[in-house]
Length: 87
View 1 (cartoon, rainbow, N blue to C red):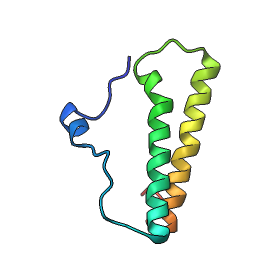
View 2: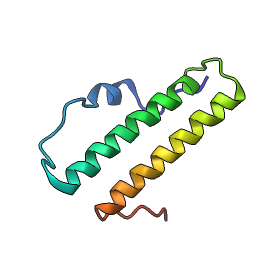
View 3: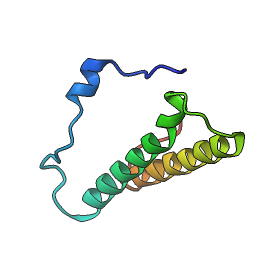
View 4: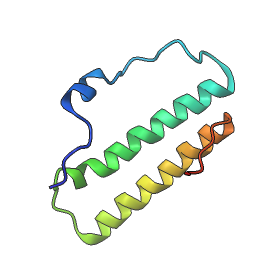
């Protein structure tokens, strides 16, 4: 089984409440869509982290969907001017 890379303290500090920035426009859309994609990634990968019994095809499908969602997050961030190419 793979352990999570975040500590229990970090998990407690995560928020499920929106903050005031940004409150409208394209930046809000990018933020909200990125959050939805990130939540989807966690949903796809958590069974792998927890060691759920999955056939290889399900394992590959979950990883592929997570990668697609991660790429979508990068596009949302790029749309707001964030540099997303690794060094």
